[in-house]
Length: 162
Image (tube, rainbow, N blue to C red; front, side, top):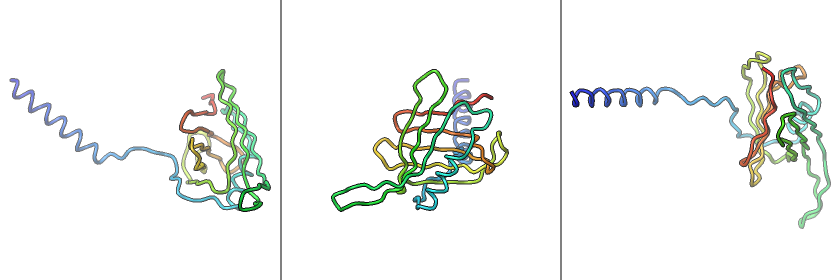
């Protein structure tokens, strides 16, 4: 009897690990493998600055595209950034403020979602020490339907009333 139970357990473990090889892990985020250029930074800056939060979103986002003159040891250089100010209406400190430089990486894809049906999912990731990122889905008609900011230390989601 013990031998029969051992064989049954071995078969179950073997079949479940074999099935796991065929089931892919789900990751809906776009692959972050492209480098921003000034035109793309301006485009994402306009989307973030002009989009309204969808009715189910409970947070605020202010975004502004700026060109700043910076002084480095190599001389003065104009740097283009999107300045982000995020605040969730949650009862905890979820404010995040950071600047996205034109040297950041991004990924995007058209995907389905339960809020607008179809939208463009964008993730912009900085190459800083803390790994700051912003990911959002816009519906193409002026609404943000998903918004998440974070870094390696914490995550600041936009609360949703579902």
